[in-house]
Structures are given as C-alpha cells and as structure tokens.
Image (cartoon, rainbow, N blue to C red):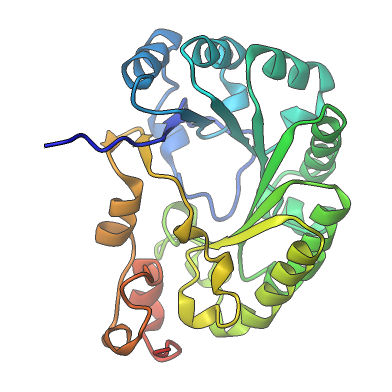
Length: 302
C-alpha cells in the first residue's frame, strides 16, 4: 500500500494569545495547555520533513512563543519550502521582528482582519488598538515584499461589512484573502457566544458575494471557507475547500492526520436536502453545530 504524501503540517506551538476573540475556536485551551517546547517542536519538524513541503506555525498566537524565530530557522534548514506564520498580526507591527522571521526563512504571513475599521475589528478581538497594529503589520510586510494571506472570520457583527473589509484588503495590497464562516465551537460554541456570533447563511449571502467580487476584480486570490455551495451560486470557483492542501494538525489533544477527512467525518454535516443536490459529492456542508441549532430549512439543492 502506498503512503499518501501530505504537503503541509499545521503546528500549534502554544495556546497563549494577546487577543481574546469572541469566536476563538480554541476556547479555554489557553488556560488548559502550555506551549510546546523548542525541542518538541523541532522533533515534529524533523519527523515530517521528508513527507511534507509546508509548515504553518499557529496556535494560540505563535508570535508569543519565545523560540518562534529559531523554529522558523529550523524548518528552513530542514527543507520546508513553504513556511507560514498564522497570526493575529499584532507583532507584525514591529518591523524588526518581521525582518527576523523573514531572515530565518518565513515566506508566508497570515494575519487576521476581522473588521473594516478599528471599532469592528477591536470588538471581535476584545483588544483596543489591535486593528491599528495588524494594519501596520500588513504594511510592514508589504514593504518587505512578503506574501500576505489574510483570514477574516465571518460573524453576526461583521457580515454586513464584508465588502468594506474586502476593499480594505485590496487597498493594503494583500495577495490573498479568505472569508471563513465562524466555526461554532470554543468561544463561539452553543454553550458560549453562539447566539451573538453565528449569523444565518441566507442573511450574509449577498455581502459575501460582493466582497468576493471586489477582491477578484482587483486581482487578488479570494476564497471562502465553510460556506456550502447552495449559498455560493455563481461563485463556486471561490469555494476554498476545493484547493485547500491536505494538512496534518498537531493540536493540544493529539494529532489530526488528515484535516480534510476530519472536516467531512466529524466537523461538518449533511441533511436530507443535500442528497438531492448535484454538488453533494463535492460539498462538505455546514459546520455540524450550525445545522444542529438552525436546522436545514434555508438549504436547497442545486
């Protein structure tokens, strides 16, 4: 039997964070788990270097790990061709720190932008000034010629502003943006902020499409995450799951060998209506928690 080569590992180096996002998928892990040691992380990098070409350093907030620059350098020395730092973007406001990461081998940066202005973004992060820092960070990285891939979590409080967020990202000259429907677990789970954070697909559809158009017309790579095809009519080319690389995740509780398979088997759900849809075989459906709360009434077969 041949071994399937997975091109990327997602390495959660720790769960401390200097933001406290209302929809944080990690929930209370910051209280439960410490950070992985330098030696532990290097061991993971070594064991996976021959089978995977990319690594994403994430968390929590990876820039809070005191050894991140050394870890990036280790990944580069081990031959990882794609080295991404997935961050809330606040530390990127310090140009010297960006330069250290770049010189160590980081070549992709994924800051998070959850609002079109400070009021919206800082509301989601629960930290005043975080918007100013992430914008400055993106400007620093752009001046240094780096590849910038942003992520925006779609929430009840920002979905109407998705076109303005898209325009901001165009103006900041990012390379790519992803609009990701909130995953209703952790801080946004049913027992926490679900009611105030999770919007309905039918409410956000037109704003999402408009935002995708703005980015696409400006020449950016744009995509969604966790938005079923029945809310992407005419925008099917932007469904991110079609092009997401196969990823092995090193999380606090253990290892997810294939995140794509995990999403389908455990993360998402399908309803009876999906069986009648011509795209059923490629659509992953919504997050399971969404359908458990809202049901299947707004979904339709294509």
